[in-house]
Structure formats: C-alpha cells, structure tokens
Length: 232
Image 1: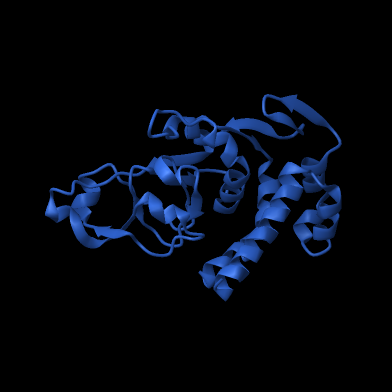
Image 2: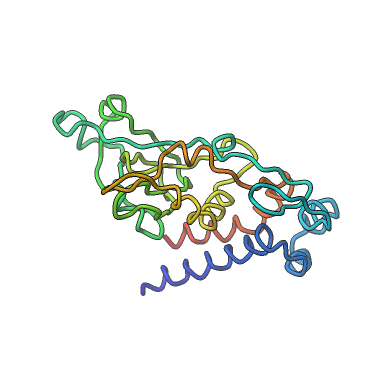
C-alpha cells in the first residue's frame, strides 16, 4: 500500500475512534484523557452535555437527555447528481470536474472522471458539491460506498452529496454516515437494480448533540482530517 494512503487510513481510524468514544459509547474515560490536551473539553458544561448521567429512550436508542432525534435533511443539503446529455457535445469537455459513482470507491476523491461545461451544468440536474462534501453511492455495484471530495465538483445521478447547513460539520457528517451506513443500505429498494432513494437519506434519523459538543469535537478531529487532505 502507498505510504501516504497507509498514513491516511491510520489517521482516519484515529478520528473514527474519537467519534465512537464520544457519540456511540459515551466513554467518559476518553473524554478525560482528551480534556488534558484540549481546553474546550475541560469546560464542565460540555462534559455534562456529552456524558451526562441522564439518558432518555428514543426511537433510535438511548441518547443523553440534552440530545435530540433529528432528520438528516433538516441539517444537510442532500444533493442528488445528474448527467448532462451525451448527445449534446457542448455539454462536455469543459472546465467543471464531474465524477461517476465508481469514484466513490476511492478512499478520497482527488480527480475527476470527466469534465463538463457551464452549459452542461445548467442544462442538467447535476449540482456543484463543495470540497469536503461526504458523497454516497446509491445504486448499482457501488451502492453503500462513501467517500469525501477533496475538491469542488459535480457528480452523476448515482451519487448523493451531504453538505451541512447548520450546526453540523463535514467531519461530523462523514463519521456519522460511516457508522450509520448499514442502516441506510437496509433501506434499499428495487428489483434487479437495487438503490437507495434520496428521500430515505433526507428522512434518515440521527442523534443530534448540542452545538457546543460538536464544536469541541471539531477542535480535535479537524487537524486529523486536514492532515489526510494534505496526504491525499
């Protein structure tokens, strides 16, 4: 394996371990260890919000009392891609990067599949997805694969992009999807060609921590993801 990819994988495992400790296992010990190095975690309000002794039962399991069950579409733009018409030459070989769902197999997406023109963008349902967007393949052989964009680009109709609107961050969304992907894949429909409907992503329910908890978590994982971007 390429050394940079190996380092990137190890860094992502570290970020994933932090996410699991905070948002899956509610591990107090991890919080205390992290708090020695990150001033924001020492704030008693953040610790209490994250690791409070009081939990409540919800439709998605037990979560801390201060958290809420929300739908993904309320906190992310769920962007479904599209493909400009191949029969119109003016739509292709431009300067706007565009990817197909095969690219979602990559650990990080760093290159375009093809390039489209401004006319192709305006004349189709494809959309520009910002750098850092979490992308999900929703059909075919790549169904359930996910990755992150390391540059701004468009995608085809077999790819959904998740762009945080408020409170959430790209890093939180990516790690959250990584842990919830099996639940989304279970919603697949169709006969010979299985797929995940965009509406299933929009209405997918998740546990939303208080904003200060997400920001404290971001302080820890942002440098990790920045390092992965540099390696990519």
